[in-house]
Amino acid sequence: MVAAFPDKDIHHKRAHTRFKCPKCRAEFDSRIPRGFWVKTFFFWLPVKRYICYRCNRTKYFLGK
Ligand SMILES: [Zn+2]
Image (cartoon, rainbow, N blue to C red; front, side, top):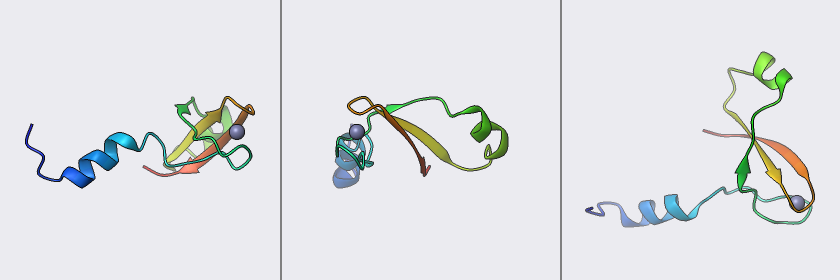
């Protein structure tokens, strides 16, 4: 593979998620299905839901 944009490529692979749990500062690394109300009312939003297994928090983030 020719790395035409090496920096971008590396960043893309290393950035599992760029979101961190506000409580324990661990990186959210698991995407879980969105809740029912989000699917129903905010299906048009680029919302993703992550879970932190350390403190059992789920959080929604806007982003593609
Ligand atoms: Zn956490």
